[in-house]
Length: 119
Image 1 (cartoon, rainbow, N blue to C red):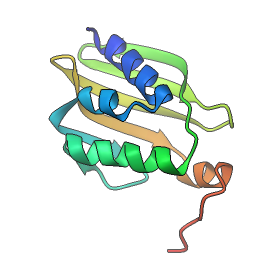
Image 2 (image 1 turned 180 degrees about the horizontal axis):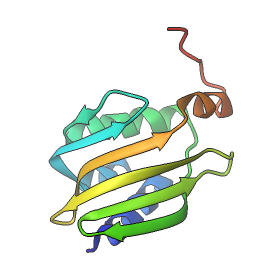
Image 3 (image 1 turned 135 degrees about the horizontal axis):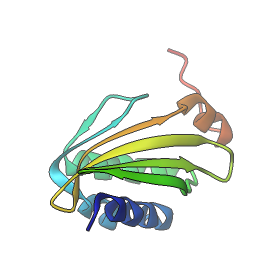
């Protein structure tokens, strides 16, 4: 698969909330760094993050653009509530080796009526 195809498959699994397929798209040693949180190291930590996030909020990823450059795919996305963001995916052997995401956590929390940390 091309990096773009891997990310398209990631979006499909994300929108189905299929944690098993999502986890299978990552290398065992993958790193997922959402810039508003500490980086997660390893497939199991990433899988747990998805399980926790899907339990807390109804999330949908609508593709606005996917760009590809070598072993990188860049996803520009939005959700039905108006949140927007982008993600950078480094792909190796058809798996996500590194992912970095940019989006506004405060807006996310407010849109989903979730508690806002006070510290």
